Structure formats: structure tokens, C-alpha cells
Image (tube, rainbow, N blue to C red):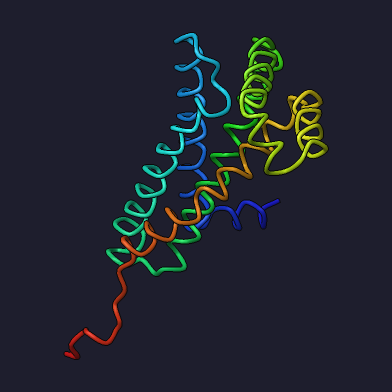
Amino acid sequence: MNAIIQYFNKPMLKLPMLFGLITGVLVFAFFLGIYFMGIVPLGNNKILDFGIHVIMMASACWYYRKKVGKGLLHLWEALTICYIVNTIASFIAGWLIYLFVTYVDPTIFTRYLAEMATLLEAGKAELVKNIGEAEYAKMFASIQQMDKSEIITDEISKKTVMAIIPILIISLIFRQQDYGVFHKKA
């Protein structure tokens, strides 16, 4: 057990996991804010929560560079920090949202499915023209068969794909190394 504790006691894991936990809770708070405004807090209405991810990833890199790296941060460290923050945050937020939708207000999910079906129906002509009637029918059936547990995997997969470019940009901005072509020798 001590070996496991020692493994996770390294700042490269401990710090991003803490930032990820905080981010997940903030994303869930954003979800609740949308919910209390009377808007269905799933789907496109929730997409703005990714800004919280970006801010917290940048904050984690900045804090790590300042406190742990003593002003230095390698690109691989920044990439690792950002991916851990993003993954932990998505996992925590996904589970919290799933638990809320399952135990507190299950009508959110049914309203979300109804909105998705309505949106699909509105674009039926264009979709049938592009993908065909059979694929459209499969897509519509998959919406009707969607399970609440897919919220977790959906959250993680979407945030992972959305985070690729921001993580690269954040990592390049916050990296600070003590070697390079432009550094003068003492």
C-alpha cells in the first residue's frame, strides 16, 4: 500500500489530479447552474463548460512551473499535466452528472433525448440526402436507445477530442526550459 501512496505522491501526478478534481466539481457546478436556469443542461447547452477545462489546465501548468519547476517546465511535463487535468475532470464531471441525472432528476435525460430527436427530425431532409435513409433510421434509433450511463463515456471522449489543440497551445505557451540554441553560455 505504501508503494501505491508513494507513486501518487509525486507532484507530476498529485498536482494535476487535484486540479482535475477541482475542475470536475466546477464543471458540475456549471451543469447545476444551467439546470437551475431551466435549460436542459446536456448536449450543446453544456459545451461552454470546456472553457473551465482550458482555464484550469493553464492554471495547473502555471502553478507547476512556478512552484515545482522553479520557473522551468518542459513540454512533455505540460502535456502530461494538461491531459491528466482534462481526463480526471471529465471523469469526475461525467460521474457527477450521471448520478444527478439518475437519482435527482431523471426527466433531464428524457428531455435531452426529446431535444435530440427533434433536432434530428428538423434536419432529416439534409441528412437523408447526405447519408441515406437507412443510416438516418439507425441514427434515430440509436438516440431512442441511448442509456444514461453513456453520459460518462460521452463526457470523457468529447473532452479528450476537444482538448487536443488547446493542450498543445497551453503546453507551448507555458514551457520554459533552461537549455536551447538562444541561451548564452556563462
